[in-house]
Image (cartoon, rainbow, N blue to C red):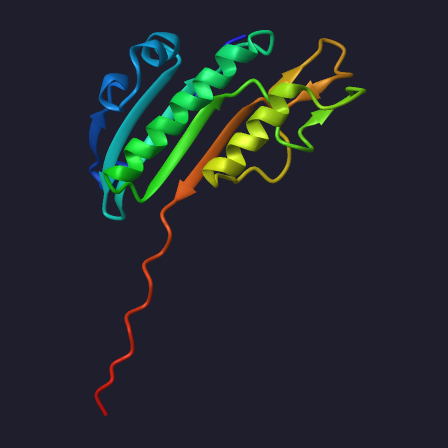
Length: 168
């Protein structure tokens, strides 16, 4: 089943939208080919500054190599957005993995895709605003369920306070 994420902007923000092609983000042709159709990246300019919005559709867990490739591509997009001074970056979509506590009814160890996602979230210093799981996948009987769709964000560090004046 497909999951779709939409971001609606209030008309008063008057966003200037700019799509970013994967070819402009210092990605190898190999990464571009593997991730085409799985990632869209847009920037909008709001009164708060430049915002990056990335939507993604991750590969299945039976394709761990491709999952790693897509996370690498996302990292490159984050670098590109930070390089153009994005104030915030929002990643929305189907990541085919769970953050700890967002998988119910499974036994055994955590699946490797969950560990890959958590490691990547830590590496990129991302924040998950979700406070409790909204089960986005469940078996027909409901005995197993998980949250595999996520909204993650990154914010630029706040500017340091101005140095105190030395004038008496």
